[in-house]
Image (tube, rainbow, N blue to C red):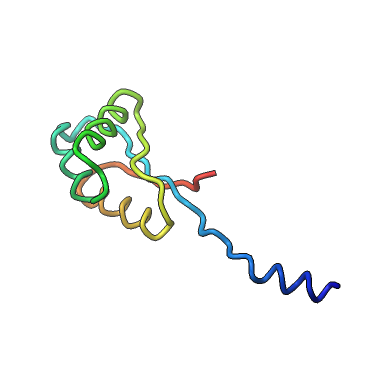
Length: 93
């Protein structure tokens, strides 16, 4: 019985942990620039979504950009930083 249990367990695929890409507010970059960088960095975003994200970061100090696999999240975060924006990632719990 224990052998069967082990076999069953090994077939269960672990879902890759998801990560949240966060945009932090800054007092340096113009709002239009932030929206442009978001659109360039995350191809799945629409203009209205990018504007909403920028406004949320501006108003609340922090905004969720996207939730995705860790490699993508790290890439988006580094790309945003490369354009002078403040960004971090955290596990999506």
